[in-house]
Image 1 (cartoon, rainbow, N blue to C red):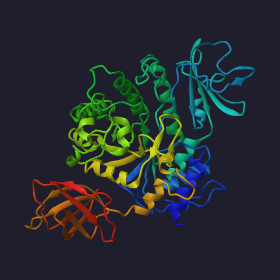
Image 2 (cartoon, one colour; image 1 turned 90 degrees about the vertical axis):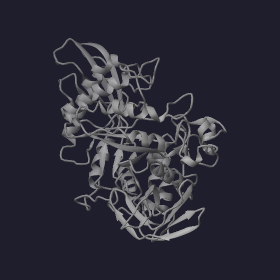
Image 3 (tube, helix red, strand yellow; image 1 turned 90 degrees about the horizontal axis):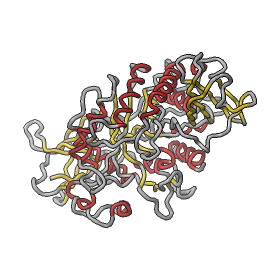
Image 4 (tube, rainbow, N blue to C red; image 1 turned 180 degrees about the vertical axis):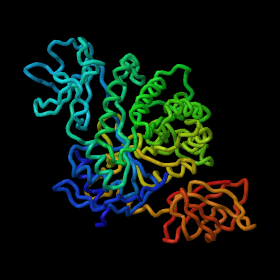
Length: 528
């Protein structure tokens, strides 16, 4: 079995059952892994245009190594985690914690004004423990806890406490393994408490406590990950729509406040935000609102570099992936549970390409436009693996559909990431069927055209195409039936190839690339 296929299957069995392509090798590719883990393999054997993945930190070092190695092998250079919820309400699922014969939520001689809870997969350093006898690492009931005060002074009579429970140092494992593979990690910021009656909004009553805790966590990261270039910055964990908003919006207020904390603690790091778009008529918003929404988000970056990774909406069914020529065609079969058996134009304001194009028009200095290609289907079908927990259930998608999502991102996306590695890229319908990552490993050499336009070269009329894996071979034009060999190729952020052929204007023409290795596009690029 090919090495990458073994890697992916290993991750699927161990884990699943419970841009610029990343070809950077670490300074020390022979770095010794944790005792008992196999030697690291730092080769990139199947570089695919999706170079970033949302992942779950794992407390097991060897499981983490297998996951990182599998992502890296198919071109991944970036991993992003979601931040745990900074919970202001009683959490009935939070495990019991006892210390010195009493509840960890009690501090002798102090009044506890507010108790917050936080469930994570990381082990904090000693710097988190500021106040003797109050701030403590506690082993209770076979679990590890931290009790932290948010008071300005240890001598204060009243304290807001945070009880943290952890299953191990999953995040530390992830950053260290990323460093060994020359990759970058963006840990999720602590996610703000939600309003009880509006779960999509942050409860700003607790933003002061959230920011105090965020500052402590980021100071700990700065100390623990010092000297590790794998720590690239942070991910903003509270989700919002990239649309026109009211002048005083609670999520934008949260972003501004929390990002000021990031700027103070990590002045040389990047913030990643991944807002969603919703094209459904009657529920969503048109592409014309996207530029204003992007500007609002960019305005919260507090002077730090920011990447805005627009969720493409295809996995949730909020946005279709189709060309302009398919506006009046029926929606894709996997989208009918979301919008009905109607045409794309009847169901949606536009396609992913329309929203990305609108966002690209107003990207300010200091901001990069990324695209988050949702690597799943809105609902599962019989015989297909996917996600059953948490709700809603989601199905696994195909490599061909991911190719279409990359096409929809067009030439504007500086980087393409995807939600989410596990389970969508690793699950298998049966033990003897391939995972999505396996399919990528098998078909990564297929050309993908993301843009095409008429262009003269050395005084000759022709067509220039941009995309991935285009070198050599030819372009086929239909319905004309013309097959034209490439005469020029260059590789930059995207590859560009030129042929001396001009398709007729006004009529739809599909363009299929076949490269020098004999691989052809899984879907044609359609233009007129």
